Image (cartoon, rainbow, N blue to C red):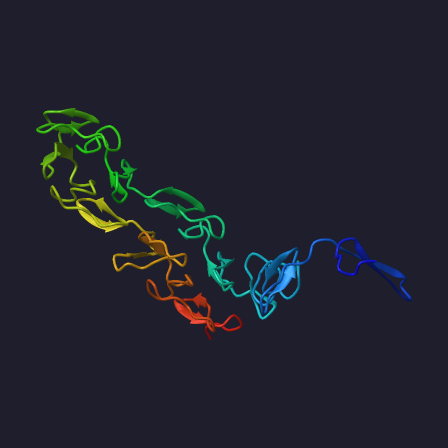
Length: 282
């Protein structure tokens, strides 16, 4: 028999006294895993921190547990679930409100969306629509009064026309103000709610802000912080990050403050501080 052939080789082991018969059939070779990794179902995993294979292949941690040192540890707070980040480190988060883990770990809401009750929904104020201009950043508008998005996104009125009730015309409705964009058409704006004319024509609210009673205010939930990315921060895959809302008390990548990640030795964010997997406050 040619010893170089690896297919169709079977080893039969009879173990006394149970007489258990173990047959190992060798088909395709198992993957060559790196240091500290193990092959489970033809996939290389780290048994030390993989919640689906914690300490042994197929040993799954519960929804509120993290895998550390090959053991499932229930250290997530009430209402939180354990997720596994890039590199295998676990972290606790609220799947009901986390824009980066909405309803399930790794489910990220789109720009101008926010996570509420585990669902990604419209992050704009009531009566507004999220529009994406060609080559520009997403923003919230009132298509009933915005001269650049009159009746729909990117539908611009002509010069000296105003957007009134979603139609381009020469007059504004009561309670609205006629504004003129730079080198653009005139439009009607409710300066109490218009993100592009908040309190006055041309006063634009920043990303993750919404115009309420004529003032720009945070669009994040009360338990969240708006993290801006004007400084050029990048995602782990090298792509640009959009502004986002997060809970800095539980977010492993933004623990205590935006863009303050927990380290390898203390990977879990609890109460805005980083702890080891088997430790915690107090």
